Image 1 (tube, rainbow, N blue to C red):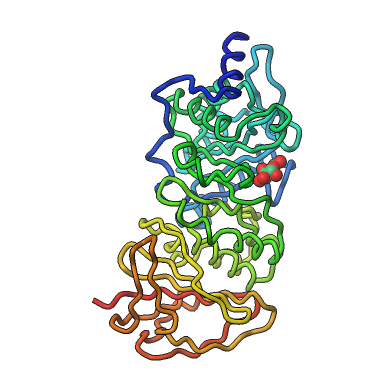
Image 2: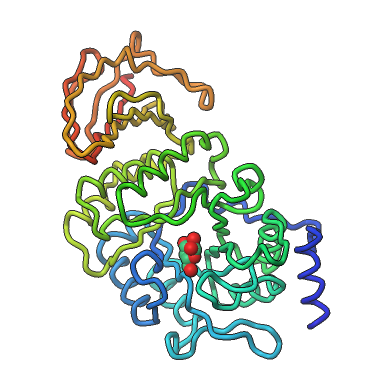
Length: 396
Ligand code: GLA
């Protein structure tokens, strides 16, 4: 066993795949992953009862049926490794073990995710996967895990190259034969968008989100230039959602809408067992979720700005467009939409709006009302720290 571990560790350092036919599970993440993760709300304060309650809530309150199927443990589920190097769950917090938790999730038609780190330790100081990737992947597969998030703490001292580290985990997962989504969490430090398409199903593009609108805006500002790297099976990940964790309703709506415009993984981070109606209405707005989950899989692009308003378009599979006006300012802003002035040619999707020749019906996705067509100008008011989101429906 020691020999095997040394080979695995060496393969990380030298960047040699242990199996030549290794690859990622291509059938996963064809649209951005949807689910829940324990970190944003509970940090290290997690246990079996909490996760079961989350599974119970999500499978009955509409979240699972809206598409949120992954329930992901983040940091701090771990105990130590045993004498052979296999990792185990904290026996006090997870007294029935992880397998029983995944059985519970599967019974309710949900999936279970787990967290590890490419370094020697996780960010909260629990055992990391470096040199144990094959053992860990094997353990996760035995436990019935469906999603692995791999973090990036405690790596630099060991001169681990990011691409190699994540390739080893990818290969380790593939060798188990159990399809597990691989979520890279190296915060964009090594430009994973340039190399991770064949390594994982999504990659974090920034440091950790904070529960503030400033943090949401800062993250949005880093995404626009990355859109060309994302697509079905390989997504930019601007981090998990903070909706329902204390921002205003307007801010939550803007945050959620923009994540959908960016085709981001929608991983909730709030208390889904006790949420208010306003939060539930935001995260379960099926017409907005449909923008995120659109099968074309092309991220939105920012086509311009005027004062505090930003204008974003996202091409959709059936020829429609999503159109979002984001108000970054605190005050409500009046604006007259002159569609022809917003006309765009998108090199990535090879699509153009052609407002001169094409008329689109306007569907307001938050009020759920049809609001005429793009034939004439439209006067709008965008509340402060909020959005207007329209689906522009191609007229046949
Ligand atoms: C890092 C990650 C977070 C979370 C914590 C856990 O900061 O970016 O998403 O997983 O570690 O310690």
